[in-house]
Length: 372
Ligand code: MUC
Ligand code: MG
Image 1 (cartoon, protein in one colour):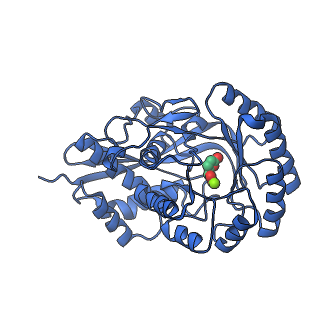
Image 2 (cartoon, protein in one colour):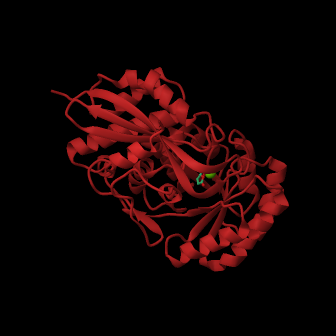
């Protein structure tokens, strides 16, 4: 008999960060993730994670809305349905629910995890196979203090943990941000690639001034300098400067990717399973990028280990990503809710190999960090 989806449980988990993480729109001291436990009639449990940044500061879904919307609207669409056909379940969700991409991504991950466990295949194998299992991982410097950021970068270089660094800017006056970035680049020199993420904080005029100065300071990549919807502006910036632009919030799905490509964008796309609504939609963005000669970058919504593992399985199926990945979410958290944490070494991370995501929950830790 075909197994069916029996229950879908959502759990809010609050994990403190190792230090304040300062972005243009919020400063995080804690990360909240929505963990999905999807139980099937053959006894298999699929895990998923829906995570965003700073409550509602980053985007239209909050952890609480993700949980409530899954419980009230999305789970009832799936419960009782056959377990094994992920595409049919995605179509059901997309047919009944607009938006809510992070919630959809968490459910899709849980379906894929269950299917992988059922068939004895890792998620990457389920997607056709991994082309690489050790992926490069960047670190984000966002303590808000230049000296602390330099020390943090130097120690991570010495540990061979990370050699690419992304600086979060946009919350301070432009000249202050540029001084901060230039000081870090100067301290790290050729030992590291230094990039910035403005998280939409500038208007186009400010961006033109800022990018000129950052280019002169030797910065390698400029992420989402202007608001997400300003595709035409991002294309103008890409054509104006030698330093490449990375589209993040502005490239949510394949439609955005196509608009940017057709408009003449060059540079790179940040892929994120959360913003796209799951692995398959994120891979669609990657495929548009590949067809257009646009670079690939494996992005994070600062997920914990479950969401990070899901992304790793997806990125592993792609050819080497030109700009690497930022799958460091678990390293920003003081603790974990899984039995075996991800293995970070040699400037990267190993994709877990066991069936499904390859992740087992630590029930005690999960209970400890679950919101009461
Ligand atoms: C983003 O916009 O890229 C990724 C790393 C980080 O610190 O924040 C995120 C989100
Ligand atoms: Mg970004």
